[in-house]
Length: 339
Image 1: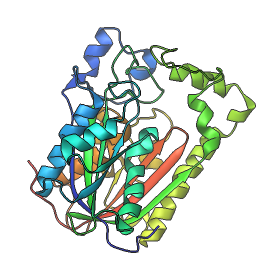
Image 2: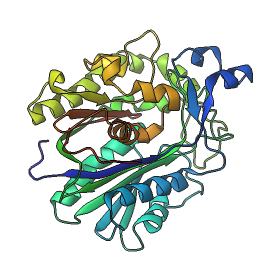
Image 3: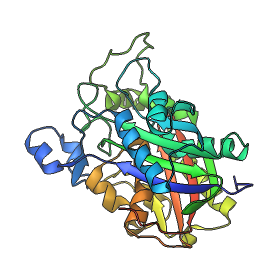
Image 4: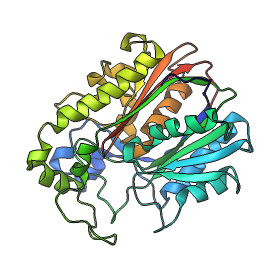
């Protein structure tokens, strides 16, 4: 949608732990053959810090950069891909309380790797409806054992730990959100479910066997044409966001896509019509795939490195298991001096 009223990004922030060289993990026998040559140099690995705690650190930095204590924030949307430190517990309430205080409504968003950028779409409606003048968006995950084997959990990427945040505002900011789109192809949800029956309690699979579930599904007639459907959903959502903004791929200065390397098959940025140098893969290869946080992290990186300037258009694209898609066109208005 082309936004009927102004929506701004007041600040962006991230908290990323130290990166572990991939070569070290290979020597230790942690990385299988399929994941050794995806282009990653290192992966961010947190030592004992939970996803919500990293989200709080990023959220506080976002507020500090915006020069606010968060009093104007009426809503906090916290996104994640997995375990948040406690069972049957609202992580968003903790993140909200530890960043903007006790009164802001906090909601968890669970669209996996599409959750962060998808929450921008959710937040936009609340700001335009007048519910609140600002929304704090956070992401945070720790892909630690025994819950998962981060190095070999899924094909084509390695999961990274970290937290990220975006402060959206109806009043002003360093960037303006020009357009937003979301899309979905729910027929693809079984790639992460496989053929096993539904359970009634967690913890049946430790570590999670997502690749095995995908292999199960790949052998079924339902899986035929899945890549084509995924590609169509991603391209359709992105094209609609560009059309709503009245621009084309040629007008976009930089593109932030999931930090996933596909090896011999087309990269996400190539599918969308961009060169590697226009993407944030130079960051992704040093950090890894931070689940729902790649887009906020990537935008912060471009601004902090002064890789974009006033008038530049940045395309943010996300996809998450299910499958759901999000795309946003953002215009840089100013380049803040973030340390």
